[in-house]
Length: 238
Picture 1 (cartoon, rainbow, N blue to C red):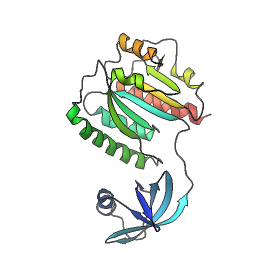
Picture 2: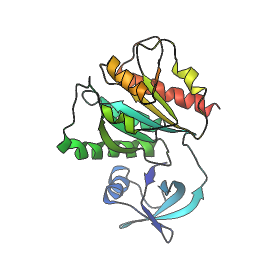
Picture 3: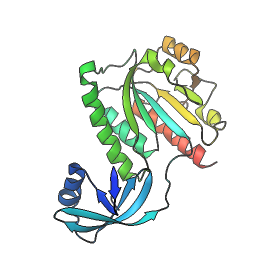
Picture 4: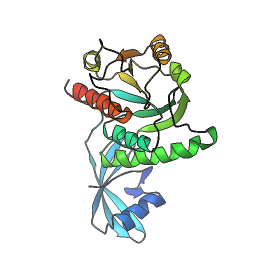
């Protein structure tokens, strides 16, 4: 069943923006009596289309549903080249991330100019919203910041990790066993070139624990999927 995040429900009727109306009527080609789910203020409602011209959708009932992780995960992801970032955002949202912060590190090949940041962020937010609707989330993953690497010192979480290919002793799995429900997790993952030793030292100085994601060297985007899947597996098993 199609899901939409909406900003207003009043007198039992749902209000949609123009893009949502276009999607419902022209893309999905929905008609009267068809049902959808709408999320308003982190609550899910079963709704029914009662008119198509103009579009009118009424609330039938509230649904008791919670598909969110039991921890608040923030992905700090160093900007990769090409369009890999689009896939990473989409899959991170599907895997339950609460926030994504784009980081520009020393070995990032791609760069985002200051004048282009808001345009890029808006596109990233649209990708996140669609992914959260598809995966039946209760919230839209927050994407509001593109920061320089040195600014990671301003990001504090209950549990803080940096994925580093030269780490041999500390596995992510072992560290996750110590994470409690309700805590916040920050996971920092590099771009194609990984992190310099100087960057790893800086992260450690600011509270990040260096962790291994296994014996094999992973691509940047694969490292994200590995780490977030591990969080979901361990925490949803507790």
